[in-house]
Structure formats: structure tokens, C-alpha cells
Length: 124
Image (cartoon, rainbow, N blue to C red; front, side, top):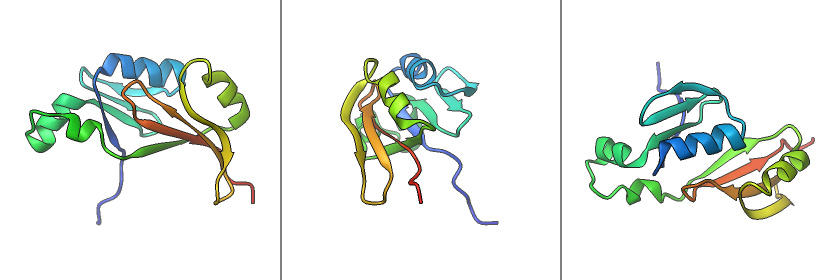
């Protein structure tokens, strides 16, 4: 059986702060919570960046993992409503835009500066 993608591990500097952001503000439900790792029901996961760096790369400088170029994509059933709800609570990189593939998205920053793209499926 070939390998299959399970979930990303996003390095964060403060697991509790990041958990509160993703659960309390974004509304993600928690599937598992440990001292240095949290898995949400949608498969998104956060991991203490220093512990992740040490276990993956045996690095003392976790910034190589924390500052990667990744953008994490989420979908909302009502994008306009979700934008209105989140705008006063988070750092908005840009408002709702229609992209070339037809879907609409907006982008925000999480507490560690990771880019989260929140969109809706393109109407076909």
C-alpha cells in the first residue's frame, strides 16, 4: 500500500496560544490535545516548533521550520459571514478576492505569522 497524506504539522511558538486561536477564533474542533501537539478534527495539526525541529532535524534553531513558505487553506460555508466575524479578531492580509480558479478567498495571519487562506468552493 502506498503512503497517503494524513495531515500537516504546523510549528508554533506557543501551543496553548495557537490552540486558543484555532479553536476559539477559527472554530476548529479538537480531536487530540497533548502538551506539545494538537490535532483538530479536520486534520489540521499544530506542534511545538522547538520540539518539532529537534525531533525532525535535530536543530537548535527552530526558525527553519517555523518560517517556511507554506500557506494553509481552509474553507467556510459562508465566506462573507466568516470574514465579518474574523476581521475584528485577527490580522487580515487582504479582504475577499476572486482568484483565477473562480473561488473567493481572504487571507489572515495566525499568532505565529503563518498565512491562512480561507475560501469557498468555486461555483461551477
